[in-house]
Length: 92
Image 1 (cartoon, rainbow, N blue to C red):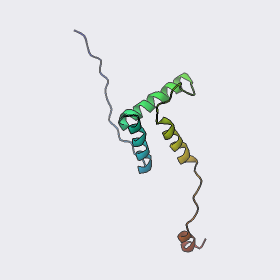
Image 2 (image 1 turned 60 degrees about the vertical axis):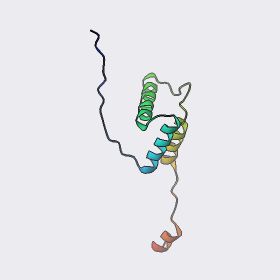
Image 3 (image 1 turned 135 degrees about the horizontal axis):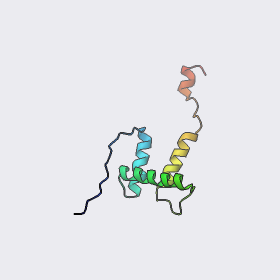
Image 4 (image 1 turned 180 degrees about the horizontal axis):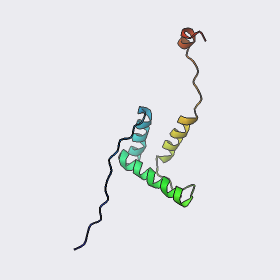
């Protein structure tokens, strides 16, 4: 009769620092998705933008801006400097 098309699912491990994982969970939760669903959504969205050359989508998913801002902030932040204890210990 009619064949049902199935997609093979690959299971993988991805490691995140805890603060990034919590942010990812919060973003997924705000959209009513599991982390798995949310990551697949982000992957599809970014892949489509890459293939089509589109820089912006007409409507971003709610919560995506928070994740994007978090990632940008994480990698552009300035050093915090030494604490008072560090200054004493390391004679700074």
